[in-house]
Image (cartoon, rainbow over all chains, first blue to last red; front, top):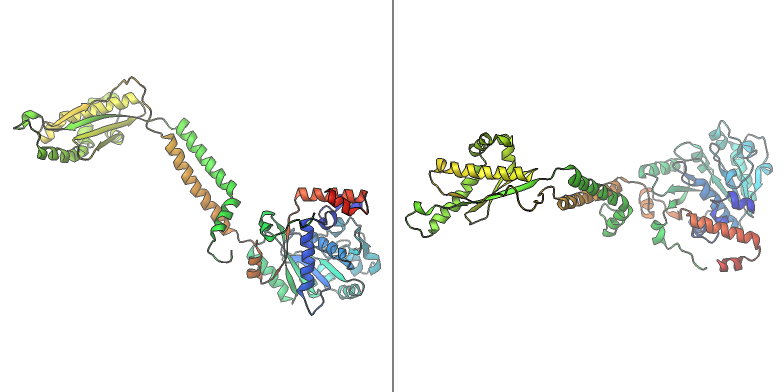
Length: 228
Length: 258
């Protein structure tokens, strides 16, 4: 618990579950659950057009929100270029996705427990020289198949769309893609380009998460503390 | 913005968003105008004489006021106004008063002639950085003008009503720079520029900001709007977490106490 307090400051769903921001993540969880009626959304990928828009924060908090809803959740840090998942949850990154895909470890070895009940983490592992090929590999698909049996929800954090192709490849293996858009940071044509790159590989877009919204701008959205 | 037309509320929102930019521009502009007016620009003083245009009684048959005569004089004023500002007069001023150390053109810049409609009085005013100099110049011009008019019009109908006092009892206030006027102009102009910049920046800002824009540009629904985690919220979170770790199992009590 002390570990959580010190290093998981941006996992607001853990530190302050009653805040409006945590409520927004629960709303996100609900909206994802209801965005598809016929197909089951089990593998959810989170990406954005550019770097530092809050992909990892959104993924982490969404994973916690799912875990708090008594779902068995695994978070995969598939950003094999600038991984952050291990830092968010204060975990070791000695073994992770890259070690699994390069057959240096098996699945049970790379699934780590987080401080949050129901939530497991697969960190990125050591940074490999060929991330795109690793993600495109059959072993990646097989791993996801295996995880589908073990977990209710599989959340995947990926690199930005326009910088590298990893997210595009990963989106074709996912049931749904969430695009994080940082408020007032993403130009229209950039967003359109990012979405087009996902459309080209036939990704199933669930919707957009607007991140870093200024408090004043959201005042019209009736996000306030309900209850005490 | 869904359409290019802006709602009145949008105008207020844009102004409020960049209020500090606008206020900053206005303050800087007014500050510069104030400093320029008070400290940098030399004060300008104005001295004036009044010249009356009227036929002297000995030139007319009767001493009675003749309405036609008055009208003629009023018409003449327009002509005189032009004559004063010609080199014909000003050259003589320059040559007869070398102490002013001015050229004809410089003199022309300083002289202003005006008349009130339907009166026979015209006002000759001169602006200069020194009041004394201005008074001397305006007196000189009036004198030369009075002397020269008979040569040009062969009528003696100009007399000087009052001369400018070279050494007035009270120190005259400068007419320029008008500090208040300059400040007012600076305020209005900088406010317009500030508003213009604010709206230009808003127009040039094509980043995604609202759910409506995302729906329109990307055709995707917005699943959540996540606000920045403010410092007070993070702090509150730490407190809650700290309390929770101490009083495990008493969550309800902790939140009520908060």
